[in-house]
Length: 176
Image (cartoon, rainbow, N blue to C red; front, side, top):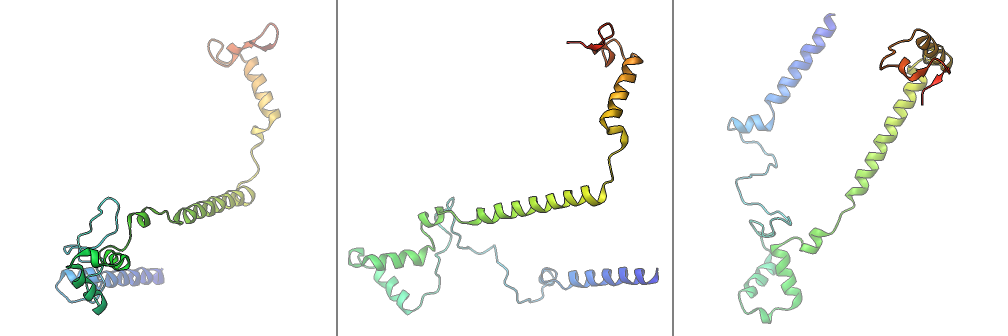
């Protein structure tokens, strides 16, 4: 009894300590925490079909080659080669519309997970039928149900609109 109380108290202290030292709580109280959280108040880059123009370009910090290309972009575009135009496009956008619309293989993972859980559920049901549930009661056997039906007919149970109303007592058969 005492050990279980001690375990519960230790778990409570551990839970409180993990929550009180979390980065969200520390940031809320003005402490500097080095985490990689996203600042949603700043513009972000997103490749989405419903918002084709992101808030900021894909590449924001350029190397020397990219800086030269951006300077060349300010001139006439007829002097740019096809590769340079493509490189400029890739500075602003990570994917084209065709690449965004291209399907992924994620559906295979979803279907595989679905089949895994269906198979696991089948194994659990099989295990329950074999090891957990006992034999069905004798009242569900066909002989017992036949005797019970005959007894209900003999007792004329619910003769107006129920069970016995479907039985023809003269011919001793079910009415058609």
